[in-house]
Amino acid sequence: MKLIRIQRYLSEQGLASRREAASWIAAGYISLNGQKVTDTGAKMVLGADTLKIDKKASAAPKYYFLFNKPLGIVTVNAQKGEREIKDIVKLPKGVVPVGRLDKDTGGLIFLTNDGVAARRIMDPAFYHEKEYEVTLYKPVSDKALLTLEQGVYILGQKTRPAKTKRLSGYKFLLTITEGKNRQVRRMCEAIGCPVRLLLRKRILNFHLGQLCPGQLKELSNNEKTVLFKTLGIDR
Ligand code: URA
Image (cartoon, rainbow, N blue to C red; front, side, top):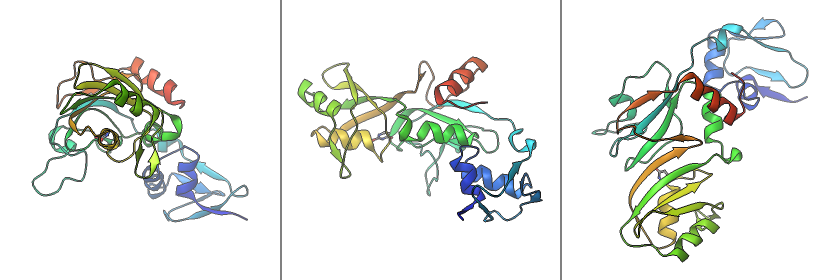
């Protein structure tokens, strides 16, 4: 008999994020063998217990935004004297950034209250591409770019194969499919070229385009369809 927390089960099945699952339980949307569950720590027996999710749980409107994070703004958890994304842009309740950009990195970030989509975008198992425009303090050689493509050791592990495209002597695009802490900066340090400026230009097939720093854009219905298809989720 395998006991599992209901919250964990819902998130592992891709039905909700942990946070979303907890709020569903708290709101009384989950029942176990016909009994409403009220304890967010409640467990179920895998394969034996029957879980039901009230339709109302997924009825809350979902929002999907692209945002151009300005340099100097933290993504979340602002400390004294700092400002975070939600301090500079008005967002519907529950909409949060998907992943993080460093305070000194600018560019594209998704904002949503759809926990499942957020998890899919971030999960390295899906190999979703993120493209960065990297400016260095000094010119970079073709050999160094090739090294980045083949993978370098950061945080005790080799990075996955990446793509590069030279834009000038000092500047190039780097496309990666994982998101380790300060990954691009660490990769560039590994080839002896510290980063001067880092901007994220693309996530999946969504481009920064003409979005100005601090500007928010809600996805159109067509864009949402593309997003769900790319992520392989049913909405
Ligand atoms: N890689 C970094 O080093 N920083 C970021 O903000 C994003 C990717």
